[in-house]
Each structure stands twice: as structure tokens, then as C-alpha cells.
Length: 352
Image 1 (cartoon, rainbow, N blue to C red):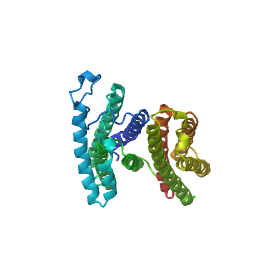
Image 2: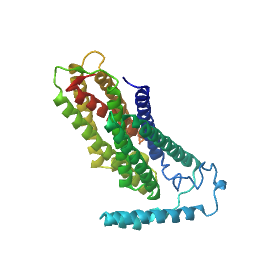
Image 3: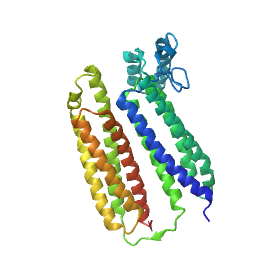
Image 4: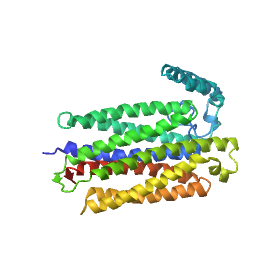
């Protein structure tokens, strides 16, 4: 008999997936508005739990104080990189003069970053609640319990990495790793949700095999993840170009990215083609109100929105709202693809 606690776990897990996507949207807004350094310290903001709204609320000499703290944190990070054999990266951090340049106070950017951090803190609490709730599966579904605990460690590491993102002034490769860890969080959440949810249902044997469809979805996921990585690198290149042009002449920024942007766009086309093929095959293989059909429909809708935001970014001078939506829907697409993969994987034995 299924307990009420298991049903609550499924609902909490589903809500946390949605809230994590909102956190990614908040991060995208921070990135697109250049608010990443709105708070020069972490986890507080200008040494306060509630950030200031005007410059007269800041302590005298705050710029130099936070630069000193940033230098100390970066030195610790550089030493850690050296121990891992990343000597050149450590040297690059120590020699980066932009890390000792103070950011001018901007209340709008400060509160944008603060809301992003607040969303992250709530996400952390939700993951803590999931880890606590997962104790009910210790004997009956151990993998749910273990993965929920692992995800708790992942989010703690993600929070620490967020502090490094701030102290290194949005160092390019750190931002990319930060994004990849967000995908890891989502993947674990989707897996535990799916596994726990299926325990609430009675499986039915499937006649036809769909192993090849599973492989196709896996390939689509891999290409999409690589496209997301290239997208973060495109954004990093855009940041470099915009700074070199003193944030002027915005319409030419994309054209100066070069082959990196072309590769990102080409991968986007490949992902689109794969998603359409997968949609057709899912429609052929699954019938009625199968969950796989519903997820496939959602994938097509998300894909269309993603294409529209990509078009706006490449042809209309990178509007900030389109940047944030592009990041949100790329990760939403990943989430749905992975969920579909789990559904199809299980359909080799069971039908939803």
C-alpha cells in the first residue's frame, strides 16, 4: 500500500523541479542585465541580509573592503587549483587585474542579484526537505534516498561555486561549470520524481520494443547539453566583445562572435530535427493518454519558443528578456528530454 508520505514526496519533488527552473530564469535575468556583481560579497550583500537601496546606506570605503576580501578568496581558490594541477588557471586568476577593480553601486542590479540569491536559498531548503522526506525510501527504494542526499551535496557545492563566480567577477569557465551543475541538479530531481511516481502506478507490459528510440533521445540530450555549453561560451564571448566596445554599438556584437555562434546555431538546428523525429516516433509507438505523448507535446512547444528567442537574440541585438527566456527554455528542454528518456527506457518493459 502506498503511503501518504510517498505522495507528498512526489508532489514536493515536482514542485522543486519547477522552482529550480525558476532559479535558472532568475540567473538568466542576472546574466542578461549584467547584475552578477550587484552584490560584491557572498552570502550577504554589502554585508547585509537585506541589501541597500541607495549609496548613502553603504559604509565608507566599501569598495576597497570587498576587493580585499575578494583577493583573499581568489588566492585560496587559486591554491586549490594548483593542487589539482591547474597551474595556468591559478596564474590567470592571480594576474587578472579586473578582479581588483571595484564595481559601482547600482540599486537595480543589487536587488536583481539579491532576488536570484533568495531564490537559490529557497531551492536549497526545498532540496533539504526532499532529502529529509526521502528517508521513507531507505528500505523500499534506496536509490531515491541516496540520490536525494547526493543532490543536497551538489546544491551545497553549487552555492560555493556561486560565491566563486562572484569573487572571480564571473570568470568564464566557472560560469559554465555553474550551469552544468544546474543540469545535474535537474537530472537527479527528474529521476527521483519519475522513480517515485512510478511506484504509485501499476505497470502494464508493452509488446513493442523501443530501444532504438531510447538511443535517439539519449543522442538528442547529449547534443542539447553540448549546445547549452556552447551557448554559455557564446555569452562569455559577447561579454568580452561588449566590454571592448565600451557597451556601444550593440547590433554588431553577435556578428563579431564568429564561428562559435555559427556552431551554436547549427547545433540548435540539429536538436530541432532530432526533437521532431522523436516526436513522430513517440506518436507512432505510444497510444491513448500515455505520459510520453504529453511530454513530447511539451517538448515541441518548448522547442518552438526556444527557436523564437534564438531568432530574436541573433537578429534584434540581444534583447535581455530574450536572453533570460533562451536560458530558461534550453534547460526546460533538457528537463523534458531527460524525463522522456526515462519514460521510454522503462517502456522497454512497462507502459505508463
